[in-house]
Image 1 (cartoon, rainbow over the protein chains, first blue to last red):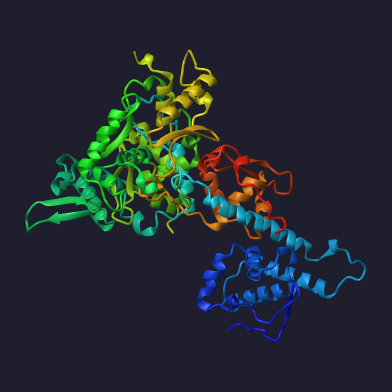
Image 2: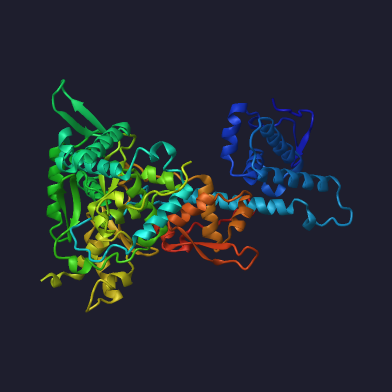
Length: 261
Length: 175
Length: 175
């Protein structure tokens, strides 16, 4: 699978390493999972470096670049859609590598280590990565700390509600719709708002009374349209598994109750 | 050693931290093993109430269970609370409200799916407090999420007689 | 007669009923006349905490003020309460948040440079929606990118009183 270059000797901190670390051998189907574990090229690089127990400041460009490129190649072979950031890093590494191979004779300054910028970035990223782990462990609301609240006593709250007018609601809805296809074609026709409203009313009544009679959902006053709306609402709720319809025997009373009860 | 808290304190912490009333069953469910009996729980709640004699709150029983509520006589000061929370006027507030109005009954998950962001629980709490929305049931799916719907008060506020008076979902393209 | 409640009980009821931490100023504002001084309020809060010795909760100070929260050691039971609130945040989410917290004010570009990947706009939207971060200005550079910073709510959420309570960046400079 992986084109291992076992013949290449890698020298790290004076030690010769003949084997590519085991964790480079990845079953193809695990590749996606593995890539998703990395938060980008820097994360992947840090991982490669860490696996070899090397200091970031000592990053051995040659082996790391090779390993990195192997990952990238593999991903591309798998027709994996690769974020362009990974490719950018690959070319950065290649550039550093070539600079290292052709040392600039003019100056031996450490300052001009072609790796300097990359090392700086890696260290910076590593710092935040570790901080984010700490933050993840920090006491957090509703996981580690629980605040006393939501005590709804019967207070008179005057002019409490914000002032909003209908046009704002409409605008907000347009905005929402632009972002999501909530009224996809299959329900825009059949499901009018009055049906949704009726669903809420019936659910509320079920919540209050436990089980309600099917016939009690209909009122004479509303006429045929009202009956249709109610009937559609009940059907829709059955479809969405919000309620169950119960009839103990043929022709006996039909009851509605919550599916969640 | 966290396993050694007295029953009444565990119940107290749960009532305090819950955002809704807790039934005896809810309270019993907090325990993995050695679940207290309903009678034990009731006794512990009585105990709690005795100990709250000198506090501003008490445990009371409402339809769906027990909750901690402020005693009468504090309204003068408390009416000035929470006068303007920034969340109330935000875009998120309006969009959440609008989705509940048009897609009701909906769960938080539905709202999140539509908006693509996590629902701010504060917004839901505010909406419930204004009595613009309420919980009309629970959906039969993992976690039994609450189903939210608008109320008559919501219609009154916007001067509507029924939801069908809301501006129609409109001419937005049907995808 | 409702005018005759002791200061500490009024504060207690307000902290209980408020959905957000209350600053000393917020508490003083509950009173129309004879506003208590900040020192009096602080003292009353100390008194309250003394009286809560045998309770499961206490008053603590976070970035935006005082709030009542459950003492440590009850999570075993309380974790069963909030079914959906124990959100797990993705690595990308936490890293983005941490960079904003430590490097604020930052632009998206800054975050991208540090992380080496494009910032997911969804994450920024979520953070703004939680009111954990906000736009505090625009950078004077091409495109006038937004400058992002954390809010008090972010600190409240993580039980911190100020940014300096965040874990120090540490000595990872050179291992």
